[in-house]
Length: 208
Image (spheres, one colour):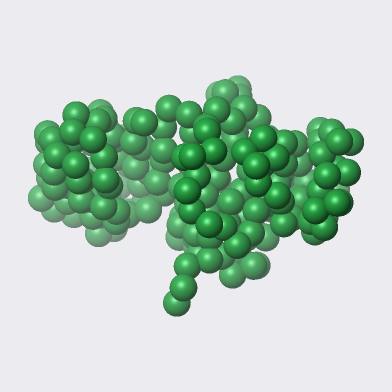
């Protein structure tokens, strides 16, 4: 099965540069004012979703000109616009999401985005790309990074049989409990880090 990648751009701050996003995306979803980040990075949205209370008239006009699909949500609703964007990506048969935006908000907003990504991890692979960190919500990954680069595995649940190869502190099928700092602030010794987690839910954060 071929990979269908979707770029989701959330509101809030977005400090990344265009050259960080090298992949081709079949769908580009602007979440309300997040469409502004897409245009600043020279992307054209395929979809806009939200209640459109914070998007500029200029960006609305540009999106209409680009023939983006508009999905307007009610302001009084039980889920966030970003959650609706994830549902849309799954409906479009995407199997991978790259998320931008959502940086620099209040603590509850940052945790909200983080936990939302984690909650969808079983349905769709997510990478949250930020200015200083890239966070992977998946249990198996081969990281191509520089020697001495810092990374952390954040246990969202208990993690069983954690394997890390290529790091200052390798692991071989170890148990990492929820809330443990055992896998935080590790460091690469070469150009590749191989991580496998047999069971549980984790976020792998790499300092860029």
